[in-house]
Length: 114
Length: 115
Image (cartoon, rainbow over all chains, first blue to last red):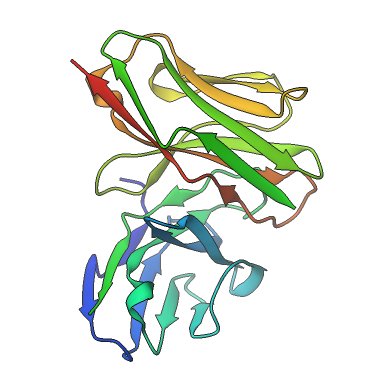
């Protein structure tokens, strides 16, 4: 158990809909990352937050947004969903968020868009 | 810019044989390098990391990796494969330039261990 909790574990929704994925980081970790894992693209970095502020941005679509709340949990919002958004979404957390820091991953949310 | 290339999306070894998973990186500044493992239906777990100290890095579960700057490589090895090593392995790189940095992952290598 990494200590990172993601909910829900599975989500099935229709195209055009909006969903929210939730992540609770390990106790004491201030940085949260979101990744998308798909068969054809591999593990893609989406966005990173540190203590409530955005710190790094990757290949995140404009239809996607995220935030980190004062209690350090984070949410990833995916809207106007398309079939291609079906993937495993991982949240990870680390103490500092610096490049040499180990990230601890949750078990992921499997999103299926039908 | 940074990137990671993992040679071989699938590798099969016999139980007891040497495990060698290849990773080459590209980075405009000195890199931090990582190997993560993903077991089925689980998140990624850190095996080991290189942060510019010793070039031979020992990790968990008997794995180690050697940083070779001249070859821009960070291959993962284990002398003797166990059935429990069957998983997907990811090499990752981030720039050693301080502060908040994006980590780039390779496409992953699935390791199959044959009894």
